[in-house]
Figure: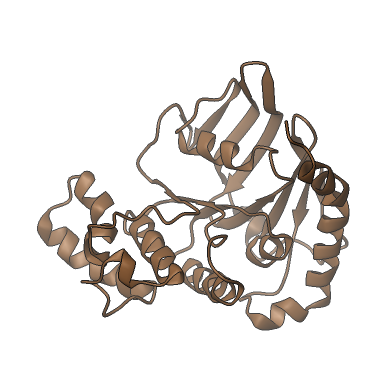
Length: 273
């Protein structure tokens, strides 16, 4: 189900976008446990789609299936027409807990993916400083992760993903491990970077406010096993900044999503199975 909550219409150019990712009737189970089922989604070439749902509904599992890290049990996922069975070039993932190598500098961490991909030293030397600067870490090239704040570590992880110049960026609760003030700063930094280098971004979060702020669309997962309950067209003015948080439509969407999820979130809190 797609919901626009009386929006003014699609964002400029959205109707001209073509699907980069196609998810067709997928399900995932572990033994007798069915995590999600019958999920059908398309993701366009230049959009951010956020995914919310109660704990345990399979948000991260879905993201890992899209990345090719986990196989689906039913259905199929295609990226640019290619069936996803293993990780592929052009798809990068940013994890919640940074994933930095503590013995490597910022420069070495950011260049790690390029090195694995067979990039030359000259290419790494050219690209890495650009992406370090893009995420606001200029001057910290030689620093080790223990010398960085949590927000700076996540910037480093983001730079490592961006250095691969992906067409698809998967974000698994990337700001959950930082404090609230840093989280807000990073949200707007990511939006700024996306404006400069638009791509398909799928952003999993537990924060309803973050989902509405970041997303062109919000996908709501519900149920046991979970499935897509609704897809909400956000249609907030762009570019988004702190004034977006006071926009009437932002409040309307936040309340709508929270009202949709409230009962299941409360139930999930006490589910010990």
